[in-house]
Length: 173
Image (cartoon, rainbow, N blue to C red; front, side):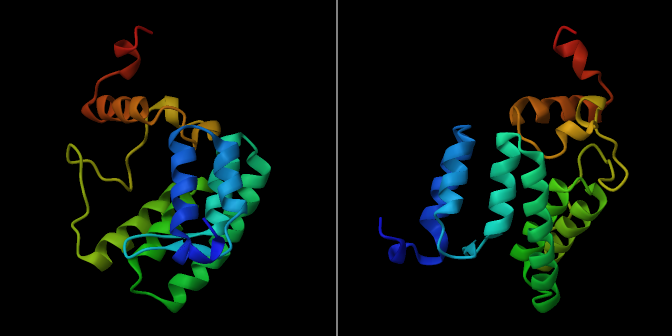
């Protein structure tokens, strides 16, 4: 597909997303590097190229490059939300960026801002407060911040932990 046909980076975003879902980080990174636009944007999402690069580098295990691109995305998105304080898509991207930088508190605040802008209620699980919830020890180490290893298992671990159960018991550990 010729680059000039990729309106708002939709094709690049699709290639990036498919490669990530298939756990092929090198292909995801190649899709981002081939982007001609500085961001992908739809009516429901906005992802600056720096954020996509950061996510791709994180998936390859290159923490230094991932962090460098998360920092670039952070600077861009802080300017974006200051200029567009009612753009939920930009707050959502900022939240992902903060998560990638390991700043859980600001990631949650950005997500809450995005939800407030669209008028969605802040979701709760088992009556827990997202601002004070402490993830299970398996997810607290610095190595696990935002990196996708087995997202289905990660959800199960946190659901069991949120209920007060020990996830390791379910894994035979």
